[in-house]
Image 1 (cartoon, one colour):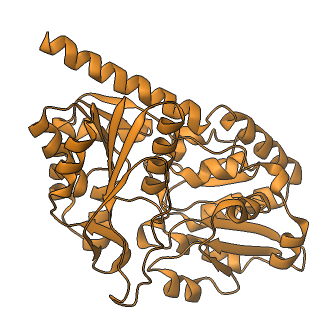
Image 2 (tube, helix red, strand yellow; image 1 turned 30 degrees about the vertical axis):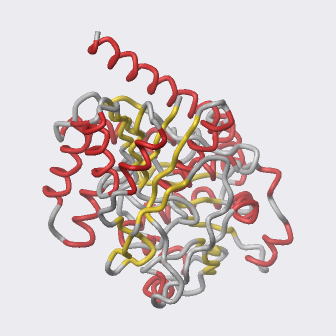
Length: 381
């Protein structure tokens, strides 16, 4: 099957959309399919304070980059500019199907190209853009949903990563919604990565290590960890970067900020935590919760969005009311006082994600592709 993946983000970007698109393209290639990736170009050299992206690594499938500009106020996010490259690339590839990864700007153009070329399209919902508009602009949520509804309604099928996201889409009038979760690398993220030397470096006094991993941005509500910084015997560790970092350094006195980490180094950090605390209430899935669970770490997460599917309260982690810093502190205190509970939650979480490999999840995606292609064939007949 020849699949064009039109994605709003792709490595070297580090975010859920980029990671999912990469894993999808890699597994499609490994299993005999022919993917094409179309994504925004990174920052060119010498264009400002943002460092240029690394040269595109050699991949076993083509990657076409479309000119882009940084999002005002959040330069780590690139917005694609209008370009003829997209439709030309899909045509040259001879794509059987177009996969739209978190479509909004480039994805909307990909949907237009698919319609013009009469190619079926599968739209993957991954980002709560309505919530982002509310958080960053204080307005524009309805306009964002109009855009989302227009793109996804035109697609042959929309895939939602969680039951909460599927319900949100259906309530906003998006038809033909099906569930498609995300995979996790259970070989990279595993309990055996726990590193005593790293733990001594992060918490030389033997403190309970409570970690957050992810973007440092307003919608993540990382400031909810502030009360933990005042608790004796607790060390807060923050992994990631983003526009909120200066404010968070001031709000979380004593916390260790480690910046962006990837690969095996990130896996070692996950496994070396005692508790993973996620604070953002707008997650359509929440990949970092899965990575913490695969690492055998007890999780505290808000009872909203994607974590509702991932965390079985009291069995594979603890859920707390969204936006409640006191509830986060109390949940961490409960886990800090009971090493047995932390261990049992971590073991159950690792068991729960054992079958959610990227290979298994992308195989499910291919089944969705096949059903969409069969439906198109039936309609044509």
